[in-house]
Length: 272
Image (cartoon, rainbow, N blue to C red; front, side):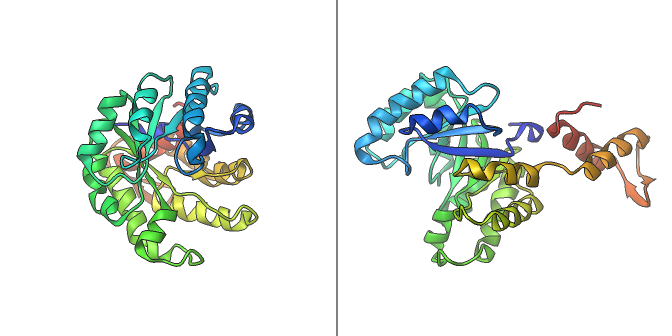
């Protein structure tokens, strides 16, 4: 499937109908830009947003990955989105409310793009292992807002009620050798809350976080980046590893820990 070392730490959703936001994204320190044709776009703006997304993808975003989020399979706009994205320069396609591996495979084949499947419903969570196993699926995105709604969790509640769903998304992604991206954080004026949620997401095993505002980028990048201490430890571990089980800095290490250290350094842009 995909390399965890290349997974984006930050994936910023932008309304494809907002040219200023698209232009600004080309100056931002994010790993992926997701041009949204779905929730962020008014019904009367769908067609113009689709055209704007195709034009923006053609112009590109420098070294940032570019993805386009389609309208869902139950939308009247879905077929037009599929046709447009298939001919676009976008790197990936994001599909909302994926609940069926067969549908995921059909969309990946129709667009010719690697697919990021949003897991936003109970049915999606239960099907996540089979969805992540589809050859065209590059990763799973936890759609936490919709998950809360469909599970009956109050919007004001924390993420405790999502614990099983979030861990299932990560487990499914890892079993399918796919990326796992955490859901968005809605409170724009709560950087401490964002930082705490990012740390919790990384501790669960997520590779990165989806975001809804440029002001969230620095916090998420820091939270999902390895610390200087982690990087120093990884370098030392690789230098000391001789093969097999052995002692390193008063702990036992083996091949698994060597592989983890290599991924950590690769994600930081380092090579051995």
